[in-house]
Image (cartoon, rainbow, N blue to C red; front, side, top):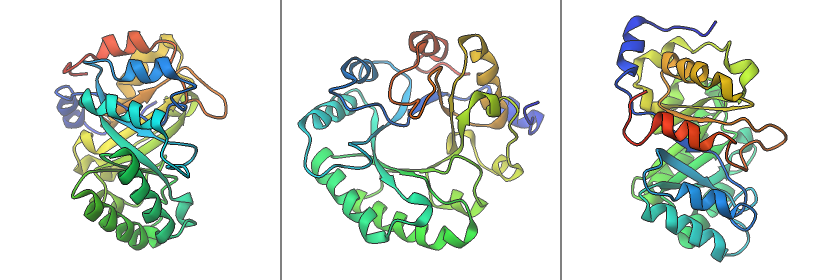
Length: 245
């Protein structure tokens, strides 16, 4: 069964404003309706990741600039997608990508995909984040670990993705005990293959594990995030703007 951290955790989470973190919709030319839907006023979105390929691309893309602008006008954070490759990508490559995202798309922060989890990689990640924050003059930084990292990572990011994977794993997942020292707005869960009939159960798991940013989809395949879930309208209405979960 899902790990229930404590009565206090569950009680605190009932006052939680749950919202979506969208990890990457397909290019606006391929997913025009999806990008328009994300920009609809009132959608409970915490952030949306903009990826042109696996990063900012080789040149400015007017379609991506327009899509990002619509989201910002709707009050939604747009994050640039930086692939850390579990520490294999160098500091210079990541900073170069960050500059292009800022110059071309005016992003509000960064999503560090495939972020390492081990303690030994933490100093280099901290170095990268310090540079990103200087470029952003603040901004929002999300570590896309996909699992629970060493707790030291929580001191460098605004949010940590502590689960990314299929519903078959999520429904039996357990939360690391150290996360109880932080508020739910520090954590994000991304779950694919969630059947419509299990949405309530998935929301309960997120609540008890203390994650206020979620993305649940019924999609599967190599990239389940590139289109919105088939039940998007339903899950939006369940959460709603400003509605506690």
